[in-house]
Length: 136
Figure 1 (cartoon, rainbow, N blue to C red):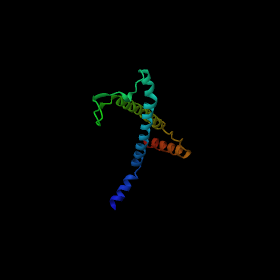
Figure 2 (cartoon, rainbow, N blue to C red):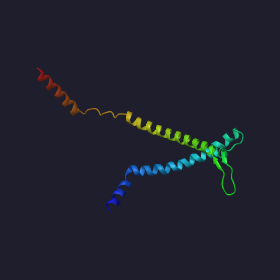
Figure 3 (tube, rainbow, N blue to C red):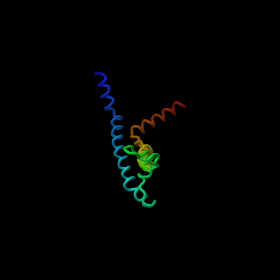
Figure 4 (cartoon, rainbow, N blue to C red):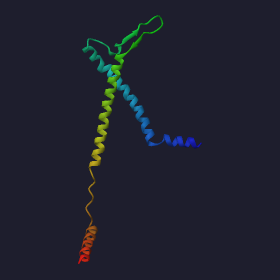
């Protein structure tokens, strides 16, 4: 039972829950970016390059024989995956840069201390007068 309590405490920590949410949102964001690259960015690039589809770019090492599939190196899919990564990394970079800018702005604005009250001013004057008398 102690292990279950420890597991529950671990899972309910803020960092673990935040990480889980981040992983889920990141997975969904990755799908969106993959769709952006494959469905929106790559078709115009393919047209500019003569109507080629990047996912069909491959080197055939061994042709298909009977029921055995062809052995290929799919470098077009790899190029598309690299573009996915670059777009995701760029989006995350700008998101983190924005968050850091907001955090730095909060840190740079020091709270101005309130003006001392009448009592504090009087106490400061008394302290200064006592220091002068002790010097004499």
